[in-house]
Image 1 (cartoon, rainbow, N blue to C red):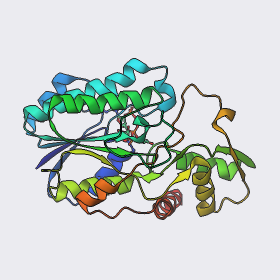
Image 2: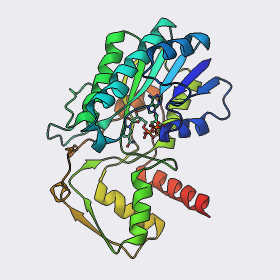
Image 3: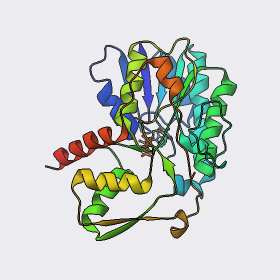
Image 4: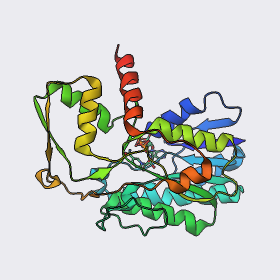
Length: 290
Ligand SMILES: NC(=O)c1ccc[n+]([C@@H]2O[C@H](COP(=O)([O-])OP(=O)(O)OC[C@H]3O[C@@H](n4cnc5c(N)ncnc54)[C@H](OP(=O)(O)O)[C@@H]3O)[C@@H](O)[C@H]2O)c1
């Protein structure tokens, strides 16, 4: 099978490179330099020339804060370009595996985990454009599986874990919000799950929307406490605070925990608990440093 991966230099893309390294399938890893997904003609040509059976879209506009001032570009990358991928996959009778976000939810004051069929109620431009991407896929009629995930971190690129490892080792005190609740997700866990699904050809007959995060629930404050504890950064006093203490253009969901029941029942994949995965990632980061 020929599998095209877009946005392959990002967090999830890099994790997918690792997950698929022993595969017998032909994975074609691309990032913007090799394939700009906003270029509909280039996408069509790439899919046709390589007889691509599956596209895994790891490309996205992921800067939640910046998206508020950059609406057109966020829409182009998170929605219009996703339509390009959907149409190209459909024209080749292929399947699109797309990644979306818990931030398609949040405007309603939820206090139970969000289900797949729940109406999207984004609080900001990023979530709205990602929701438009999901809608573009539905409208195209392509065979597709959409995986909404949350709070991704990894050994690659910039992410919350790396930032907090740095801050908790250098600052005497740190305030972190405790009024936003979700689930940290190790991008390698999601990549391994996607690889399992592709390798076992579990896409066929299972088109639809799924939720994938690691197991468990916490606030950004709890997440930071755990990062510092695992890393042994004991000299920083980490304090809980309200989101209102950090003036920001973007309103983030106060609760965006994802219900993963459908994912687990459909694919039979065991989902790791978030602190177990966090320990693995921090261990890898420390080993890479050494
Ligand atoms: N990060 C999170 O916390 C989070 C949470 C929930 C859901 N998600 C979703 O999970 C997916 C993966 O996220 P991630 O954190 O791995 O993203 P990421 O690290 O930001 O990677 C995205 C990649 O896409 C590339 N890209 C940008 N424009 C492109 C274009 N026109 N054509 C092709 N590639 C392009 C980026 O390149 P440049 O770096 O050069 O721009 C980058 O390498 C995304 O769909 C995201 O919305 C992420």
